[in-house]
Length: 506
Image 1 (cartoon, rainbow, N blue to C red):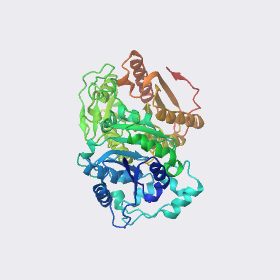
Image 2 (cartoon, helix red, strand yellow):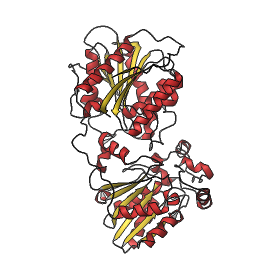
Image 3 (cartoon, rainbow, N blue to C red):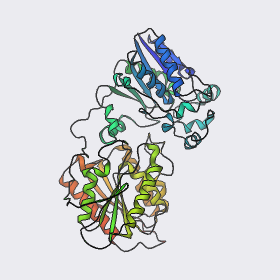
Image 4 (cartoon, rainbow, N blue to C red):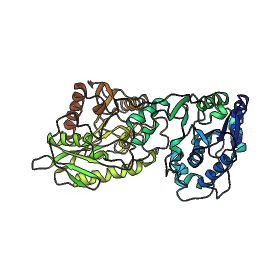
């Protein structure tokens, strides 16, 4: 007989699971909905201890620990301590916290994140439509919202600010995730992160993790109790989609760049590496900005991989200064810090004796694309070109914790005549491709100067995944487009380029 321990999200208690619990009991399961300590001094550690004690009092051998939203943090902490008592952990509309992560990292409300930086008093629960600041209300009725309003309680601040502490026991516990696609990403986005994201996501590949989808918002236990109960039963029995890595995992760490890369020496200036041409003078410069988030302890760091070194050396061989930067985009909440790192790198680059400070291009890749918002909103005269390779240009599902100022689609209104070179992968991840299409629609509306380099059969990160003649040709065309812009005449101040005519280089 399976025992389900159900842990709700912020502001809620065991009552939020009533509809799910009824259906699980009808299926023959033992169900223990949990209401955690709501006292003002309670912290994440308090809740982990409560769940651990509950597991110690439970006689049934097959315990499935389910965590919704914030509830996954204490669930993981307890499962880590009692790995021999937990047969499976199930994530429901929850993030993927690691050791050392506070729940605050996954809070979508910017005001709440800012407040908890200095205020330790309990958070009052939202009311009515304000619940949308914590997750999608998709599927909730007026009665559901009224229930939340009536029974929700303040959330102790330390439950969100204390870091999760894991000791290795959790590695022995299988896991499943119910992905609520009306609230965040689906399994395809998880697979994308496993294949092209930070290495920490690779643990999601293999038999230890299973994924199920539910077309629901952030509170499926209220909007879809029968469907969620069915998925929990399936998860408990080991059902769900597994992700495998296959043989085509990109190897940015080992693979050489796919275009000629002369052995150009570089100079290291803090987070900035500079690759000047082997000639005297002051030259235009291109700063290459890596994507992310990346792991903080990744070795080699992005600028030390053949991928970014190759781009920089190739540019230097063509007579411009290539440069790379290791910015600190380690989590979705780090975009402000990463933006500061890029700004500092640009200042250092413009001050370099080999650089013409009035002829600079930014070339941003992948998840770094959101950093383009600042430069699009108010581009300085010395920025001659902004290049974007398979970028993320708006917050896709699951990225709601990114600060709202990092939205290139919205920032285009201020771009004026700034030329943009967009490298578009034809086989892009759908969630990312949607942001590119939104960007191009906004570019048409604002009359932005966008040159598209299409790679019809290219995937996200095609330089590493698709080492074909078509990929080499696409990189060559993109490089030529950037050099044409950064070497050209100064942009006229106060003018807007005519609407793009749809011309695509392909």
